Length: 152
Image (cartoon, one colour):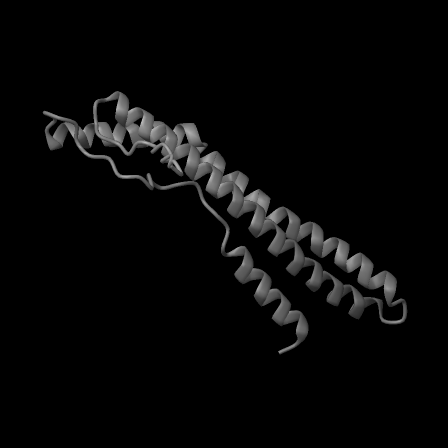
């Protein structure tokens, strides 16, 4: 397998790890006192919809893809130009190697940025979900205060 094909395969694997918007909460909620499970299910769906809207929904997926693919495309272009410029006798070969290396570096950078954005979107989703479920009278996890200890 030529080096160009290996680099392209690695870049495709890196790009396949692109993040997506949250599909659900990462926190657990329980029905509130006196609430039926059917009422809880209605609240749960309404709060999932609200949280998806607050965290960006489909626009978060689109932005995540742009964040992942953009640096890969730019890296490939810069790598090709650099490779062609540094090997004037073998400009085509230099351009292809440079493009492959630039694609790989850009894909890694883009995947890291997209992953970071995904964590932020999940955090926003969870906060909106917990607020909504709490407002509807359901039980949700609460942040715990750090315990203070005294030395004497």
